[in-house]
Amino acid sequence: MVEAMIREAAKSGNQSTLDAVVKVAKATNPQSADEIGALANQLTTQANDRAKKEREQRLASQGYLQGWTGEGQAGFGLTSGNTEEISGAFGLSLKKEGLQTRQKLEGIIDFLRTNGVTTREKFAASYGLDYLLREGFYTYGIVGWEQDRFAGYTRRFTESLGVGLRVLNRPRMTLDLDAGPAFRQTLYTDGGSEFEVGPRASLAYKWTLRDGMTLSEDASVVSSDGTTTFISNTAFTSRLTKALSGRLSFNIQGESNRPEGSKPTDTTTRATLVYKF
Image (tube, rainbow, N blue to C red; front, top):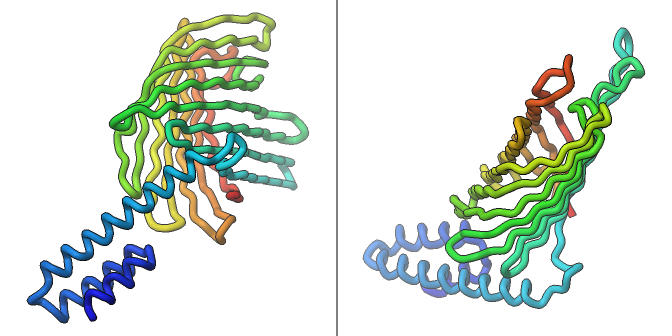
């Protein structure tokens, strides 16, 4: 009877349900606690192996346009009275995970107008491809485009190749670190242009505090020919419905070689709605 209950709980695929049944079974059958624990571990291992095989088969069979997931986010602000201000931020992120690859495509539009004057206007898009190796190691390639006149450039392309490592790979927490050379082609607002080569490093951290609630940090730094660009985005996301979440984020962007009169660092705190699909 006890064994049948444990096996039935394991079939549900819910680890919390299995843990609860095992706890009750051990409490009511203390003389068989070791056997109950061994059976639960065996069933959990079998379920994990089965899920892993099913995932590998699914990933191996999907086409190029299949398996993509994504999220779109939007934030909008409006102030009237002594100060007329309108701001908006819109972003799109698409991801695909394969047997040996991870792909990510991102785009963002961010603007602010105060009393009819644009004081912030940024456009950016990037594509990244990771090729997974053994023991958490991977190689990566990334290409990006940006336009930020208030940072001093009308166009910037960045390309980078390198290696990375998943330092943490827990059920509720992951941390990726990578680094490699970067190439940048920048067209400045004063008409000048520059081709730069230098190092790039980044990190991607995600902590699932509980189901539907995550804390994340994405940061990168590129340095070349005396110009260093640092970007950090810290976000707390909480699920509201199955597809809709609320997000509070804090963004820092620093540029060491900005036009005279401009501050080297911009910070933005923003609340947005996120739709996952």
